[in-house]
Length: 333
Image (tube, rainbow, N blue to C red; front, side, top):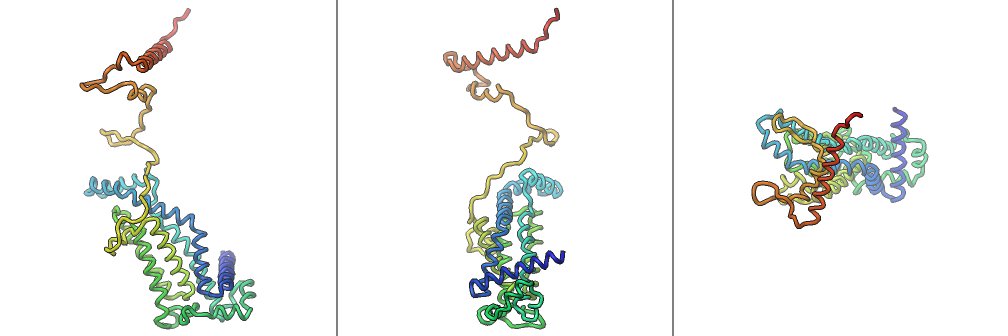
């Protein structure tokens, strides 16, 4: 496993070197690398965002369950889980891209640490170590963001290193909170609300890490979070962020998807259990086309002067006669 991780970090080092030398800027190289990394996981991100949209579309049904079973929490939980199963929705499906980004984040941390700190360049992969021997490349990786932020220095490492190093960690926390709120529906069922409240601690965890990681790795996380906020807006609109920032419109974003149950089931009114739907025969399907409701108390016969209706009735009589003959037992000779 250690060899696989070393190879992964070495690959990230070479990619960062390529983007930085191609643009002549370490900061721009990290930004382009971040966008490329987000494109790699874009299919999973879109799947996560679609799951979030389906959860929002399900909220009216969940709200109705809360109205019906609000006093019975066990029943409410059972019905909510049944609803998730019926529409094939995973309430935690939106968390997958976040966890998939963790290996990249920690890999970028090590790659930046090895590239930016001269004492750590002995740990570079063979290809990256050969490339950074070029004085121009080595000078490139001595650049500072805005001329004051060293990419290889953390806000807190061997003491506090200056207020300028707080900018990126604070931006990282703020953008993650914004994205989390945008991904959260404005109205939630109790189970989803508890899960989302637990997820709100994640930005604080990453914030703590950001204060102790090199600024180059934190820049990667800031750009990644910014891209995530943009994707979230075009998928869900402002979400629960409109609950806190009242000047934001509440109903932005594309229309919610139309949900279709995975399996249509009927429920017995007496027992409350699911039953298989009855199969309809040919004539029960055709009946609405061949019979008209009378103004009184029943079905009326089709008009006698309608040749189409008479032809259909004739076919029905013949079919019924044929079925009766088939069911009649034959006499033995």
